[in-house]
Image 1 (spheres, helix red, strand yellow):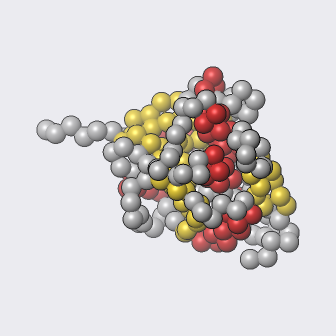
Image 2 (cartoon, rainbow, N blue to C red):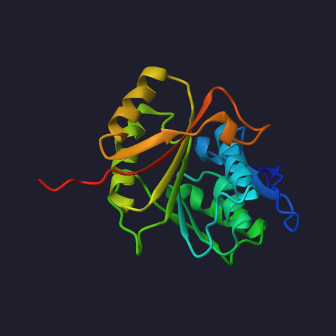
Length: 218
């Protein structure tokens, strides 16, 4: 993949010993990789929420595994890997975006604990191990993605897997339908603005923290 037409985006994180997180993106769409090649506001809000909670000492991922679904440019997952160098992060998206993910991993010298692979929600996929944390940023912008995403989360999350899901509201009725679908398998709570980064948050962007429901034996 040729990256000469991409532009660079930078995100500051709170670790004093870490430089800026840098990713290449294509907001103009000239490279034909679709919406996944752009840094979206939801990703910024989610990344800064993870940064803020880490700085408060509320998030420790040492020795944990993280799976990001629909990584796009990889900004959120790469930032998380930089904040928690002792965790292992897997960035996933459709095949055409994997080269961009790999390039952005290299750009941040993050190859020690961050890798990229293809994971298409419409194709049944299994993992070598159940992740400790799954993150999803702006994964429900298209109604056609709702069922594949809900099924992918149900398939890949274990009983102790934490799921952080964030989205910017665009079509409230359709988003409510996804939340209802997701609630069939997961219990979750909304993350309040007071828990988020004091600057990087929005009334139009919602964050949820969920886990699988425990099945009660009949």
